[in-house]
Length: 520
Ligand code: SGN
Ligand code: CA
Image (tube, rainbow, N blue to C red):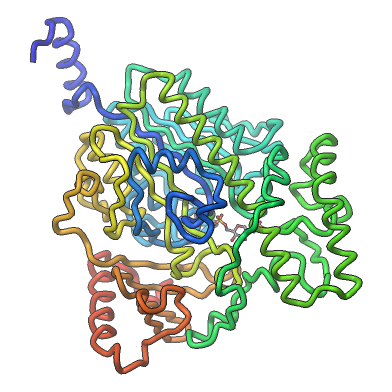
């Protein structure tokens, strides 16, 4: 390489200062992330909602890069997923096992490592790890879950400031503003993290009504009776029917959240509604008011049977959910445009992901947590021009423990041995040699939505789940029973499979040094 002398001097100086030498053209990493975005509501993933999912910009990343078809989380809940992404470790190894824990900010993270290696780093939007972000040159985060309308953001100086507008738009504005003001001599690592489409699925007001005329297909399992699996399933508290805050008996709970925006929130004052200003409420009321009136009139006249009401709630849920996704996709479009307009596209890795999956009516549910496919799956779509062939669809089993090592390899930084995940870079270039054949899952929460602690292993074809509280095992054959309606754990036909999976489950627990159930 023919480098002019002063430039060479600078390079050498830089490498000595950093204690390492890095190529000058390390890629930027733009990590676009949302909260509770199920793969089936992204067109590029296909599936029953592919035709109605409003995701042209997320799909663009997919078409120009790769869609990981078998991407999963390690623990299907918000804070733990984020902690896993930052550390490349399972929940027990990074200490953040349940929402409400406080992230031990003293530990190693990929953000700290990238920053130390010469990246400029920022996180904007939802954080949900309690302790302040460390390892970022800049951060501006939503407190806790954050609000959809006129949200507060926590600033680096400790101030909490309220901003007018919609959380998804504001998060994007702030991400763009940071890109504008960043130290452009360094490669960047930006985590742009939305609250949407998280409960209460509250759309940008400009999108109210966008899905009113869209026919939304209903999942086959909307009326699951929870038979043929652990009896713990039936004890859940996450049914669209019984647990959305408007139940068939029209009893309004004191902590009304506004899940289906009914009855008119001005009478019951949901937290989201209370944050809106008069103009915003006008739009909201104009949209939901007449629809609620019509529904309630039919309901009170006895025209709707129990299942009609569940179906009505499901459709309203989906219309609001997809509307919030629409704003997330617009944000992705704005970020892609930024990298295009500033000549950054060729050397920027763009990722779209979300902290876990979500039930969109499957098994009658909303929310996540279970190791069932809908909540276990995590979108992972990545574009890296010149490295990934456009339109790739890798099928290997990947997990959020793999993100940190992937970022490190892309940034030419050594991966510490304590990281439990593996870099996806070989898969990006089609090298699938020696890739893992199974994934470990662990869910530790005890209370919310009455989902029991459970642990498991998944291969490409089978899934074994253990519920220690009841000492019960479920086994699913994902080929013959993709909707996971029937455990075959006691079926003699599956004896060999059961033995092999049980052994694999214990092997993984040992390999990852998973804690004993009694210690949880
Ligand atoms: C809130 C939600 C729950 C949700 C948790 C965890 N209720 O408590 O439905 O499971 O967050 O979500 S809400 O009415 O306040 O929205 S997570 O994404 O943060 O893990
Ligand atoms: Ca989440």
